[in-house]
Amino acid sequence: MHKQHLTENKPLFFQKKKLAEHNKKIDNINREIFNCFKSLEEGIDLIATIDETINN
View 1 (cartoon, helix red, strand yellow):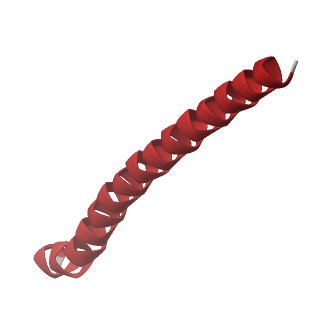
View 2 (cartoon, one colour):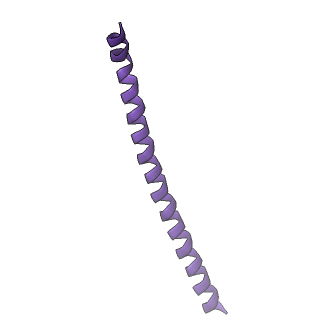
View 3 (cartoon, helix red, strand yellow):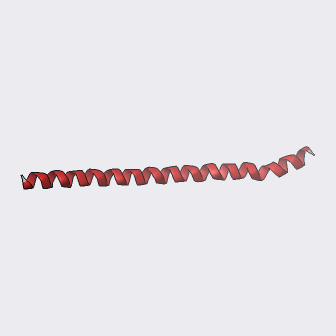
């Protein structure tokens, strides 16, 4: 009975482990996307500053 219980719950443990791994990957991808947008914003701000300087 005890062995059967462990066998039945084993897949759930692995599902949770896989889910945690996927969530970590998603968090890393989200961080990379955020950093890209941050870099783009900084570039746009720089272009706006240069444009403003040229036009004045």
